[in-house]
Image 1: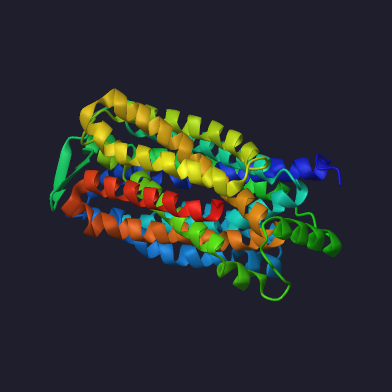
Image 2: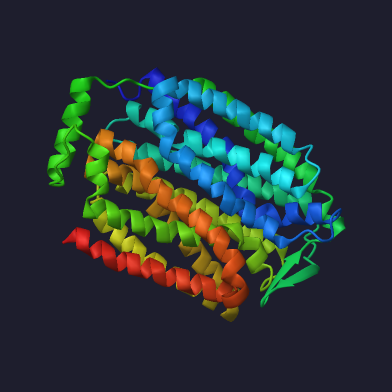
Length: 429
């Protein structure tokens, strides 16, 4: 097969466009303070729990959609699933524009669009991998890198439409020992315009990209040969009978699952509360937006680099080293933020590089350990640990943050990543 055939390039371009459109969803934690402020204008009693509890509840259907997405794609067709889902996401966004309450807005803007994101994430990757055999890491890095750059674009777009004059967050509320800042009506009133612009761009990218997606069907003999070769290299005996069940029982799988849970637990908690948290220490909206956008750019570049490394370096060794580094950086986030603005900026930028490296090597790493077919099929199950982290993170904001505050919560989560790094020594011996 010519991996750079017109069909392969067409699929790559389509995947890039879809992923770029999906990136709008990932700006939620950096812009939800605007959405909350906007809806609080008309509902002064709006609880801050609406920023967290719906996310926890949403994680359950997202987890189910993620785990069964490949089975659904096998049944109705990969291309059809991606095209239908992106179209329904766009429709959900149009409904969200006319929401009368914050809860309705969250359901249509975050809930249904998030459900679509979970449904197509892995079918999209599998379509792309089918065209680029032996370079899965490289194309995964490209996809994640573009995703990061698109997130950067949407974040700047929303921030500069909502808060063009860099007004400070002047209103506050207290939940337990944790104080939350939000914006006055002068800023919040611009939110609707920002949502509309960003949403139409994201929807157009996703729908147009979905039209270009195509999947290359592997020959049965080719698929079996790739499976046997890769599984023999790792000394993992995988037979045609219930290979996924056998993988779930392996030590490698359990440790990888636990490690990625700790990473996603920290990433989601910080991501969903980035502006809410940092505004308390640095009340400069545009500065912390630029810090985050620079982190996204560096993280996107890291996706390209680590994606390529995933094709060349042993996955478990790379994961072990990156977890150690991320544990140290994560613990330092609250410490640096309380010591020096400049130290926090450096630490946050390093965090983005390392965390994106850990996430991008997951898919290619599973292919490396468990074989091409089983590795691709097991990816949604490992990602379930990420969605579990998503659910627990949202609940921890409601239950733990009022007691430990954000500072104590992030230190605790950083130590959990260190424990995960220690456990990965077992699969490197």
